[in-house]
Image (tube, rainbow, N blue to C red):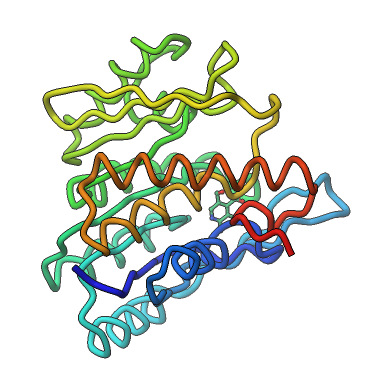
Length: 263
Ligand code: PXL
């Protein structure tokens, strides 16, 4: 049990996703957040909000991880956007320097500001170097399709099949998020624990994807695990937290509402 949670992720300059949303989620769930920054993303309002993406140098990332892990007794970590194969390797090497009770990986695969070729290299590096270290991984539909190699995911059975295939890559627990993209009027997620599949359901709130929802979901799982929850309970609490955040986002249209902050 810990009152600290650690996150290694990208900065997202609007404050609605990435490291900023993760730290706010930690705070709202009662754990002290420690953050390491891997890249800086600033959406470009002049170009349909495309991503401008700047990676942080590997040695600077390694230095931050060294400082954070030496200063604090950290035993749970969330991994968010990494962005380059070099960053993936740096983070994987740094993580291996200590043991972790939980490594929660949000496998953020695409960033529109990147070359498709570079993104593919990053996906492959994430698959081979980070997923084997994960205890929990939380892909969305697109990420689940990429990581599982499935042609399409359209039913709850497909979600479960994707989760089983992704578990073969190393993580102990896989949560595949159906989100807004799965047909039907419910937001359905499946949790696979290596043996059993649990289906979690909530009413869909609109058809639009909400920026930051995936970040705060994985961050909430991390905070709950830090406090000593089981993975099943952490995932349910995180789903409730993200649901409330999406309701706030949709009803107030404020990006920061994704972390449940109503101002
Ligand atoms: O929501 C995924 C995400 C994670 N991390 C960073 C991002 C984004 C999406 O834009 O910018 C830094």
